[in-house]
Amino acid sequence: MGTIKLQNIRTFSFHGCLEEEGKIGSDYRIDLEIKTDLRKSSITDELKDTVDYVLLNKIVVEEMDIRSKLLENVAHRIITRIFKEIPSISRIILAVSKLNPPIGGDVEAVTIEMEEYRN
Image 1 (cartoon, one colour):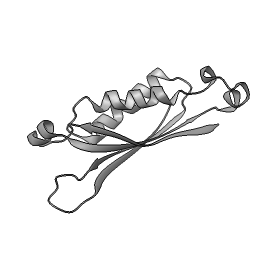
Image 2: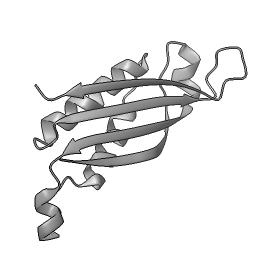
Image 3: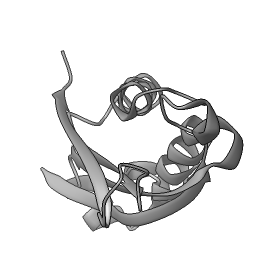
Image 4: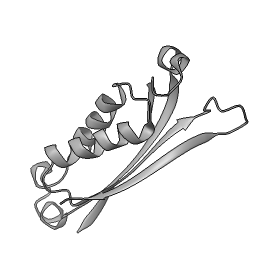
């Protein structure tokens, strides 16, 4: 087994329960960690034998473009889509952070983290 991490993916998205959040948007940071078998690709040196992190990034960005009220909902969509499109992944850890959230205080970020295993 092995691990692939995409750290600090940045998007500007429109998630949140407040109507204003859907209009003005916010900056987000996404950290993704996947578990997969890297033994074959470590020998063959071929992209077809591993998980393409360009595809992982594409999935994250596309799902972040779909408005959700809750970060949990967008995270669930990202995880579900990754499992559906990339059968070789056995585990996903995903953190979605809203930077400078509008919560009436000096808070750098609010983060939710989800960990899922393939059924």
